[in-house]
Length: 147
Length: 147
DNA sequence: TTCAGTGCAAAGAATTTGCAGCAAT
DNA sequence: ATTGCTGCAAATTCTTTGCACTGAA
Image (cartoon, rainbow over all chains, first blue to last red; front, top):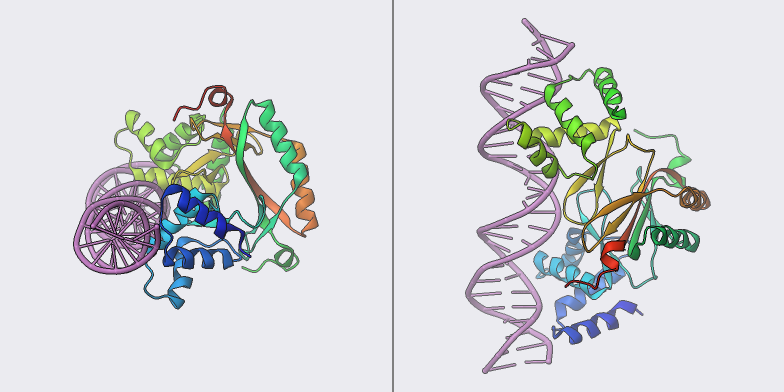
């Protein structure tokens, strides 16, 4: 059961905002997305089932999800802002294949620990972080480079 | 002496491109920048000393620097593409203060080592990475939060 | 002389916003 | 009934491109 839904509705109540059919639809689709959808991707997906929905609404909802803490904005390299659910796991980092575009996730507590250490050495207080490893996934690196 | 300049000129020759006054100016200013300038910031700086210079030229030069391998494009969170010199050090990561916007750099071989380990476990070959820690710098965290 | 580079302005792309009607509280 | 939300279209913002002229090789 989608962890973020309850959290989001609580946020809406707390902020005096309204729960709407669109927000529910968008959140459902967002949480259903395994990947890291951009506004446009999510909009296109939603449009198939619910043609009336507007791009701006999707955009505003994603920003709202981010404010509510159930989503996070990310930039991978194409010019688009992508959003990722924070509900699934506490945090995870990414392996981005530069050949096929696949994005997989990982988590390493030892790395997190060292990050804390580094921060401490700099008198810095971490609130969040972002770690992306770019390169070739196993499928692409075992294959002679195409193109 | 700026490490990237020689490298860049070699790249130009290799590619049959031309060395121009503007490219030199832009590269000089770029290397002089301690921070991570966006196209616009660099353009504005250059404009003060060399009013004739065009935004498009700065933009195209930065892309060229990236192709030449002496610069790297980055996205921190504001909507702008920022460029960073790769000449100074092999690689470094960032501490980004979300209060004052300060960006400082660090490098930790132990973290890099663990990254390699993670990649290996996933059959992934790293070509580059990006690690950013967001939070409060020492100055901002020792100060009561100024809303 | 040749062909890439420059500067301008205009085009694109992605994101954000104004507003009139709609819907949740 | 209120007051926020939606969808449309228009406005911004940032990035990229077309073109005639300039300048490096």
